[in-house]
Image (cartoon, rainbow, N blue to C red):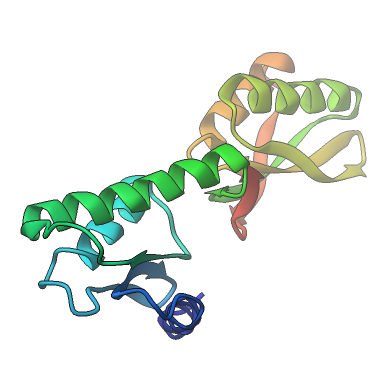
Length: 189
């Protein structure tokens, strides 16, 4: 998503809630971050919304809050608390509904081991995934002579642990023969 798409979203919200006094919003997008106060005092609306998005590490996200002025004046502090709370409540509801995705950076690791060890390699990958609650899966394999080469997609930072566990499972007969960065994998939260 881009900030242009975020602006378009905020405009749609404004047209759907035409009686709102303010449509304040914030986004964290591939081309930057933006916070809009829409007539509220500077920094009292968009920034608290942006802080809520950043506080939980969301990316590719836009949140718009419509305010209908019917009550007492809130003052700058009250506005900041109200907009921030509304954004945090929206994030919590999205998490509870399961509509947020956790993006995990992954790398490929190619492990070579004796052909008879192929089952052990797959078992270790499964265990790494379950124990560390991070992605680790075999994405390709090939037999070359008397050895098997298995390509794994693993969460960045776990490459060394994966290789160490592979070596343990094969009595030191595993070795890394390749690998490199891949696109991020998506795991639902």
